[in-house]
Length: 146
Length: 177
Image (cartoon, rainbow over all chains, first blue to last red; front, side):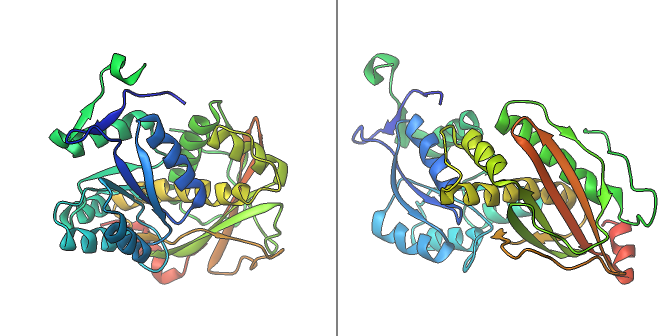
């Protein structure tokens, strides 16, 4: 898999911590591999919206990657509950059901961005940098050992 | 846009504008994930009850038109495709192969439903489930089942689409908002 210049936390230079929420183990593993190619770390995983809320409270990750269609509680509702508790939470929806109404609903309820499945690593990389803003810094090639 | 495959000669009532997005989504996702072109075989009507061929994932649809779609692959094809998508070898016996079939179904059907929703139809897609029974329900007066075959270098992928095409819903399907 292509390696990208690492994105680190600006405040302490540590890897970005991600919570991956998807009911598919296969999708979570693939997203994990993509995140690692950005220099990030998987802080935790959840297979449904309810578990995502608990895991967010416990782990306080820098970014949540959230699927929409899941059992028990869907991703848009979980994103809303996470953002209600922590308005600074950065939730990026990652879903195959990327129609306009769904995207608008997700953004209105607190998600910061929407990435359509199948995930293209170069697209997710740009979204991550955009969502982090000044809280994320791209390591220069020499420092990253590229 | 992928050209439509040959249509069955008789008894075909399903609206092609409902089917085309599934063909396009499967073509885009499979050719990207497998890094090779795919061919779409003929459409066939499934007259008899559905018989599972290998590892199958089923996705339920609700909304303007209800129904279900089943993705069905021979076990060795499923393992090759899962390995391609994962970028690493996955043995046929690994549970990840079944997970990969479910996720593939989720992505293809999700993309197709997104297109249909943007066209004005209202569908809701439910999480994929492994379809483990050997048989499925037969087509009825209101439920038409179509089978599409996607020919890939890793083997054939069958998509069995059964839509609950109740007469009261035909009008809604024909007149998207």
